[in-house]
Image 1 (tube, rainbow, N blue to C red):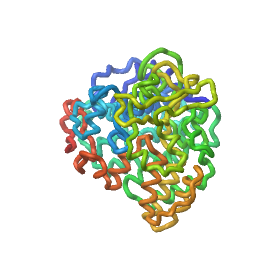
Image 2: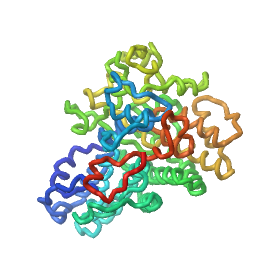
Image 3: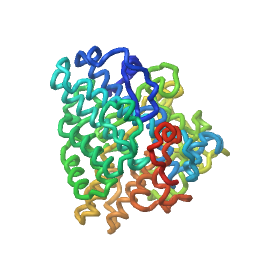
Image 4: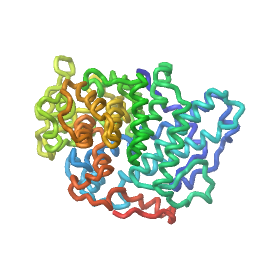
Length: 479
């Protein structure tokens, strides 16, 4: 399917005044006024693409998503050449990070830049007669969705953070942290405003695929409810999504992670990637490094995010999701096609002897080194079903139906587990394995003790020291 491409926004955001809470203090005054730039629907849509752009950046949603969600948890080990290879990930994984950690900095700066872009966009068009009313309403709703998403990414990692809902003046760059409760309240407000306006996925035109929808905003709001243990609200909204007929499970589990199924029936919201053949690295192109980072070093990859034996053993022997999730030594991928390849995982640098199967591409679909086009499945329908089941288990209502729908999709019989939460926690682990969820599932459900070195004071990560230096009103997290 066609993907949103963000290259056209680079020039725009080199001339518009954008800032995060702190790191953009030296941004020069704009050379082009809002009134001059926001003079058409096309300008508003270009600026909207710029507000989406940080979602896909190398440090924000590529390496760092699985580095925390998987490697810091009990589901995988860092891998790579040795402990010094991506040392920031290693120190996080043993709960021995410091405020200079680059992974954590990547979880602070891009969201605030995205928030700044969303705020700039809203203020540039809200009372602008040059923008048609239908475009104005839709674009503001998408900007609020993005602002809510970026604030949630920050709250998930750091707890309460400075809430930014307008373009800041220099005197406002040193705001203190808001409480976690206030941060979540703002996120909820933005997502509710967005979902009440955004179109359904089925209403999108082909060139709009990848933009936020009612389902994306609603599903993210369910996740926000789940993190706050608002079980009644979470179950009700999850049911509404499930009953909307906008989404379904892919009949074949392996298809979920195939390039041909980007933005597919199970994708509620994908982070968009594309291969533009620029030959560049990281954020200088629109592809992802996930494939090469998680590939076997014996097959041309970097050998990171190696599944643990504990995760391997968690799968039932007859669960087809095991082979679709974990690569064992000499497994054959893309068998019977010109891309057929034997994958070797048993080599000295691999700490577990396994590799992740998800987010791997056959050679015919790969881009240049860091330009692989496979989307990141940010929210998929199976997770919405499991959110419904989790909330229902807390509400003493029907958790079996949505949970068994996930199991039945892969040919497994209904669960025999009678403890709803235990059933959901298990199903989340095997269904969503190596998709960046495990760490957050453990800490939000009080099971952090399953991770070696974890203690409750390490639930939230350290705010980057550079941000503390720039804003002395930021109170550091304990760690």
